[in-house]
Image (cartoon, rainbow, N blue to C red):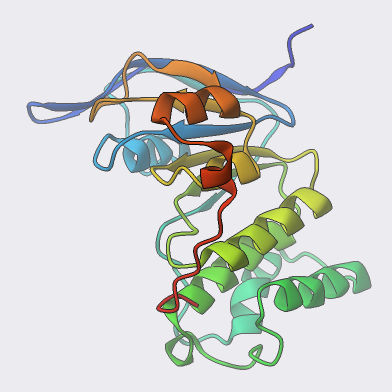
Length: 236
């Protein structure tokens, strides 16, 4: 039996002047399903996320979110510069006037350890590297245990080893989470998602529905390539 849809996109279209970036795109994400949009840079991936979050308007088409309040994490961390790491992370709780329970505090400390930010809770964003700031944004997004998260390439400034640790922690603490990941980085896909919408052209149209193994074959990459860790010392 098909999984009930949490997110339904039907016949979505978007163009900027004469440039079409989304062309009659349809897909669905079920409860507990983790899907990637894999496409070249400039193919409209970020535009799709902006439409799903309401920042951009589609030219036509339909979007339906069922009993879900999505959390969105972007390529840039979008931290408040005048707030500390801890204050930035707990800002959603403050806005919603939610109680920060002992369980939340314990999860917060676990996240700091996983992200190698223990000891940085009183630092301000300007005192952190780009990768550290991105980790703060990731903690802020996941600490409230959302049921659906949209990820617009939020791991770009984080090295592969740290990225793997973070993704493993996400799946360990939220095994039933629904995820939409947009990326052009193949290594992230087998670590995080189950299904891939694969686009070859610089426009989101006519995707191929693939699993991870099929994507590996499509890209001509071996399994070892996807599992190889290549740390970059310029990242944090």
